Length: 198
Image 1 (spheres, helix red, strand yellow):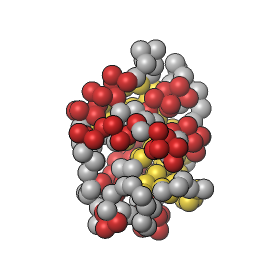
Image 2 (cartoon, one colour; image 1 turned 90 degrees about the vertical axis):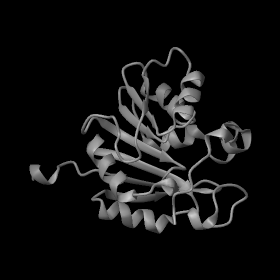
Image 3 (cartoon, one colour; image 1 turned 120 degrees about the vertical axis):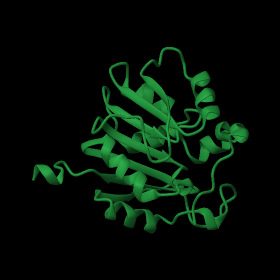
Protein backbone atom coordinates (compact mmCIF):
# COMPACT_ATOMS: atom_id res chain seq x y z
CA UNK A 1 0.00 0.00 0.00
CA UNK A 2 1.46 3.34 -1.06
CA UNK A 3 0.49 6.97 -0.45
CA UNK A 4 2.84 7.86 2.43
CA UNK A 5 3.41 11.55 1.63
CA UNK A 6 6.52 13.34 2.82
CA UNK A 7 5.82 16.17 5.24
CA UNK A 8 7.29 19.47 3.91
CA UNK A 9 7.83 20.55 7.54
CA UNK A 10 10.63 17.96 7.71
CA UNK A 11 12.75 19.58 4.98
CA UNK A 12 15.93 19.26 7.05
CA UNK A 13 15.80 15.47 6.63
CA UNK A 14 16.33 15.89 2.88
CA UNK A 15 19.69 17.58 3.30
CA UNK A 16 21.25 15.63 6.16
CA UNK A 17 24.75 14.17 5.57
CA UNK A 18 23.62 10.60 6.29
CA UNK A 19 21.14 10.75 3.42
CA UNK A 20 23.86 12.01 1.09
CA UNK A 21 26.09 9.13 2.17
CA UNK A 22 23.44 6.46 1.62
CA UNK A 23 21.87 8.00 -1.49
CA UNK A 24 24.40 10.29 -3.21
CA UNK A 25 22.64 12.47 -5.78
CA UNK A 26 25.64 12.38 -8.09
CA UNK A 27 25.28 8.59 -8.31
CA UNK A 28 21.63 8.99 -9.28
CA UNK A 29 22.56 11.45 -12.03
CA UNK A 30 25.18 9.01 -13.30
CA UNK A 31 22.57 6.22 -13.50
CA UNK A 32 20.38 8.53 -15.60
CA UNK A 33 23.10 8.73 -18.30
CA UNK A 34 22.28 12.36 -19.08
CA UNK A 35 24.37 14.39 -21.48
CA UNK A 36 25.03 18.09 -21.93
CA UNK A 37 22.09 19.68 -23.73
CA UNK A 38 19.53 17.11 -22.59
CA UNK A 39 16.09 18.06 -21.32
CA UNK A 40 15.21 16.06 -18.21
CA UNK A 41 12.45 15.95 -15.59
CA UNK A 42 12.81 15.48 -11.85
CA UNK A 43 9.38 14.48 -10.53
CA UNK A 44 8.91 15.21 -6.85
CA UNK A 45 12.02 17.38 -7.00
CA UNK A 46 11.61 18.65 -3.44
CA UNK A 47 14.50 20.92 -2.46
CA UNK A 48 16.51 20.11 -5.58
CA UNK A 49 18.48 17.19 -4.12
CA UNK A 50 18.80 15.69 -7.62
CA UNK A 51 17.57 18.61 -9.74
CA UNK A 52 20.54 20.82 -8.86
CA UNK A 53 23.19 18.19 -9.78
CA UNK A 54 21.14 17.51 -12.93
CA UNK A 55 21.36 21.20 -13.78
CA UNK A 56 25.14 20.97 -13.70
CA UNK A 57 25.05 17.77 -15.80
CA UNK A 58 22.88 19.10 -18.64
CA UNK A 59 24.68 22.45 -18.75
CA UNK A 60 23.52 25.82 -19.96
CA UNK A 61 22.09 24.39 -23.19
CA UNK A 62 20.00 21.79 -21.38
CA UNK A 63 16.89 22.02 -19.26
CA UNK A 64 15.74 20.52 -15.96
CA UNK A 65 12.03 20.54 -15.22
CA UNK A 66 11.90 20.32 -11.42
CA UNK A 67 8.30 19.42 -10.57
CA UNK A 68 6.62 19.12 -7.19
CA UNK A 69 3.07 19.19 -5.85
CA UNK A 70 4.14 21.19 -2.78
CA UNK A 71 4.58 24.98 -3.06
CA UNK A 72 6.72 24.87 0.12
CA UNK A 73 9.10 22.37 -1.50
CA UNK A 74 9.35 24.45 -4.67
CA UNK A 75 10.09 27.59 -2.68
CA UNK A 76 12.84 25.82 -0.75
CA UNK A 77 14.30 24.34 -3.93
CA UNK A 78 14.37 27.67 -5.71
CA UNK A 79 16.10 29.27 -2.72
CA UNK A 80 18.81 26.60 -2.75
CA UNK A 81 19.43 26.73 -6.51
CA UNK A 82 22.62 28.59 -7.47
CA UNK A 83 21.78 31.68 -9.51
CA UNK A 84 23.87 30.51 -12.45
CA UNK A 85 21.71 27.40 -12.95
CA UNK A 86 19.09 29.17 -15.03
CA UNK A 87 18.45 25.90 -16.86
CA UNK A 88 16.39 24.62 -13.91
CA UNK A 89 12.69 25.44 -14.23
CA UNK A 90 10.70 24.92 -11.03
CA UNK A 91 7.12 23.86 -11.77
CA UNK A 92 4.12 23.26 -9.53
CA UNK A 93 2.41 20.09 -10.73
CA UNK A 94 -0.43 17.77 -9.96
CA UNK A 95 0.45 14.17 -9.16
CA UNK A 96 -0.21 12.72 -12.61
CA UNK A 97 -0.45 15.90 -14.69
CA UNK A 98 2.94 17.39 -15.44
CA UNK A 99 3.31 20.90 -16.93
CA UNK A 100 5.76 19.63 -19.55
CA UNK A 101 5.35 19.36 -23.33
CA UNK A 102 4.87 16.02 -25.08
CA UNK A 103 7.94 13.91 -25.88
CA UNK A 104 10.46 16.63 -24.99
CA UNK A 105 12.58 14.91 -22.32
CA UNK A 106 15.48 12.55 -22.83
CA UNK A 107 15.24 11.32 -19.23
CA UNK A 108 13.08 11.53 -16.11
CA UNK A 109 13.63 10.50 -12.51
CA UNK A 110 11.54 9.87 -9.40
CA UNK A 111 13.51 9.61 -6.15
CA UNK A 112 11.64 8.37 -3.07
CA UNK A 113 8.39 9.38 -4.75
CA UNK A 114 6.95 6.20 -6.27
CA UNK A 115 5.65 4.87 -2.95
CA UNK A 116 3.69 8.13 -2.50
CA UNK A 117 1.71 7.79 -5.75
CA UNK A 118 -2.03 7.25 -5.57
CA UNK A 119 -2.19 6.08 -9.19
CA UNK A 120 1.17 4.71 -10.38
CA UNK A 121 -0.26 3.60 -13.73
CA UNK A 122 -1.50 7.12 -14.48
CA UNK A 123 1.89 8.58 -13.57
CA UNK A 124 3.73 6.10 -15.78
CA UNK A 125 1.52 7.01 -18.73
CA UNK A 126 2.17 10.70 -18.06
CA UNK A 127 5.90 10.00 -17.97
CA UNK A 128 5.61 8.20 -21.31
CA UNK A 129 3.89 11.30 -22.66
CA UNK A 130 6.74 13.66 -21.70
CA UNK A 131 9.58 11.31 -22.65
CA UNK A 132 10.95 11.36 -26.18
CA UNK A 133 11.19 8.10 -28.15
CA UNK A 134 14.07 6.20 -26.58
CA UNK A 135 13.81 8.35 -23.43
CA UNK A 136 14.85 6.82 -20.11
CA UNK A 137 13.02 6.68 -16.80
CA UNK A 138 14.79 6.02 -13.50
CA UNK A 139 12.84 5.12 -10.36
CA UNK A 140 14.71 5.14 -7.05
CA UNK A 141 12.68 4.17 -4.01
CA UNK A 142 12.77 2.54 -0.61
CA UNK A 143 13.43 -1.19 -0.47
CA UNK A 144 10.49 -3.20 0.85
CA UNK A 145 12.45 -4.31 3.87
CA UNK A 146 13.27 -2.94 7.30
CA UNK A 147 15.67 0.01 7.16
CA UNK A 148 16.88 2.49 9.75
CA UNK A 149 14.94 5.31 8.09
CA UNK A 150 12.15 5.79 5.60
CA UNK A 151 8.39 5.26 5.40
CA UNK A 152 6.54 2.39 7.13
CA UNK A 153 6.98 -1.00 5.46
CA UNK A 154 3.31 -1.23 4.48
CA UNK A 155 3.66 2.00 2.46
CA UNK A 156 6.62 0.79 0.38
CA UNK A 157 6.43 -0.67 -3.12
CA UNK A 158 8.56 -3.73 -3.87
CA UNK A 159 11.00 -3.56 -6.77
CA UNK A 160 9.25 -6.51 -8.44
CA UNK A 161 5.97 -4.58 -8.39
CA UNK A 162 7.59 -1.53 -9.99
CA UNK A 163 9.11 -3.69 -12.72
CA UNK A 164 5.72 -5.25 -13.49
CA UNK A 165 4.03 -1.84 -13.61
CA UNK A 166 6.71 -0.54 -15.97
CA UNK A 167 6.13 -3.53 -18.24
CA UNK A 168 2.38 -2.93 -18.18
CA UNK A 169 2.97 0.73 -19.11
CA UNK A 170 4.95 -0.30 -22.19
CA UNK A 171 8.47 0.51 -21.05
CA UNK A 172 11.26 -1.59 -22.54
CA UNK A 173 14.74 -2.68 -21.42
CA UNK A 174 13.73 -2.64 -17.76
CA UNK A 175 16.80 -3.08 -15.58
CA UNK A 176 17.19 -3.31 -11.82
CA UNK A 177 20.50 -1.53 -11.35
CA UNK A 178 23.10 -1.86 -8.59
CA UNK A 179 21.22 -0.41 -5.67
CA UNK A 180 21.89 1.79 -2.69
CA UNK A 181 21.97 0.99 1.03
CA UNK A 182 18.23 1.46 1.57
CA UNK A 183 16.90 2.07 -1.95
CA UNK A 184 16.56 0.17 -5.22
CA UNK A 185 17.07 1.73 -8.65
CA UNK A 186 15.09 0.59 -11.69
CA UNK A 187 15.30 1.99 -15.21
CA UNK A 188 13.04 1.61 -18.22
CA UNK A 189 13.07 3.01 -21.75
CA UNK A 190 10.29 4.37 -23.94
CA UNK A 191 10.12 2.57 -27.30
CA UNK A 192 11.96 4.39 -30.07
CA UNK A 193 8.82 4.19 -32.16
CA UNK A 194 5.35 4.85 -30.84
CA UNK A 195 2.65 2.37 -31.90
CA UNK A 196 1.19 4.88 -34.39
CA UNK A 197 4.58 5.14 -36.10
CA UNK A 198 5.06 1.41 -36.64
